[in-house]
Amino acid sequence: MSETTLIVDAKQYFDALQIVIAGLSHEGVDAIADELMGAYQAGRKVFLFGNGGSASLASHFACDLGKGTAYCNGGKRFRVMALTDNLPVLTAWANDSSYEDVFSEQLRNFVEPSDVAFAVSGSGNSKNVLKGLRVARDLGARTIGITGFEGGKMKDLCDVCVVVQSTDMQIIEDLHLAMAHALFRIVHARITHGVVATAVAS
Image 1 (cartoon, rainbow, N blue to C red):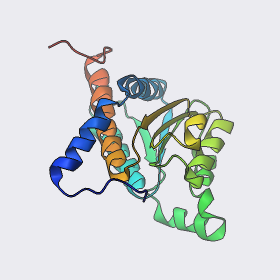
Image 2 (image 1 turned 90 degrees about the vertical axis):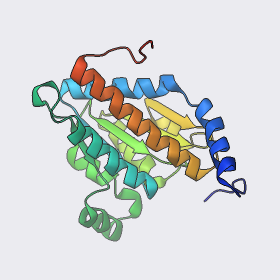
Image 3 (image 1 turned 90 degrees about the horizontal axis):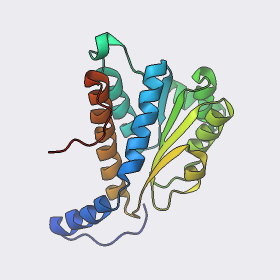
Image 4 (image 1 turned 120 degrees about the horizontal axis):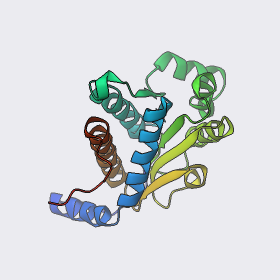
């Protein structure tokens, strides 16, 4: 965990969160929504991956995209998969090869040109995440990332990357979850109602 400001009460934490929210790139989130919609419309696959809390978010977001849109648009399905969910495969690659290979080797099994590899990393420097993105790019996939700090090495491996400008891992992860929920709502609206605009006047 990175060194962060000592938090002694709830107001201090939520004030810090609001400052980071104010600097979040809405255009970047909309650009990711465009990538996801492009994959959906073309029948391409989306692969999500990350470590720790980011692994949990990969699973969570795959559930939202896969199940949450299942009854939209006449039942056309979002082809989405979290590479974090098959524990036997993860541990087999970690044990027999290297933990650095747990995502890249799964991608070699499944990814095809124009699929989407969607990486989640607080630091942007997790070796297995970086290797997954490199392999996905080599195989012709689009690469998306959400990260924190200054973007790390991951930023340069992504076609679209949104960086949460913070060094506080909990705040970074809070905003990653918020972005995932925003992306789900945007995609759901576009699929269900054909909404193209990302903002609706009140």
